[in-house]
Image (cartoon, rainbow, N blue to C red; front, side, top):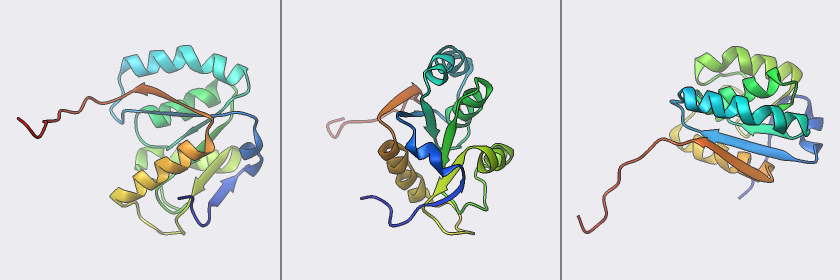
Length: 147
């Protein structure tokens, strides 16, 4: 279900770009993620695609930073109110993007991030984009019901 309202800071015209690509991955990225983004993002930004991600630690923040370094545009979708930054390590990047790029949230000012907000944020990231690039995912161990 789409959000009832989206709050924004920045350049709303970025939503009118012909192609938006979401980039997601592990919050605990490593050198592989950096190498992959450094290899892929120059071509993505060169072709005018706008990067959409979640301003989280790891691949999300790296995606925004690499897009900017390669003279591209980027949209951050956050799971808090626009006046808050989570994680705190993304605060400067979020402030820069709010002035020069675009930051979106479906939550009002002062809303702190709750666990379910991040799932809700992800549906917006996916909904804005024509495609999603998973750069690095964290392996999860699971057990079947049968042992």
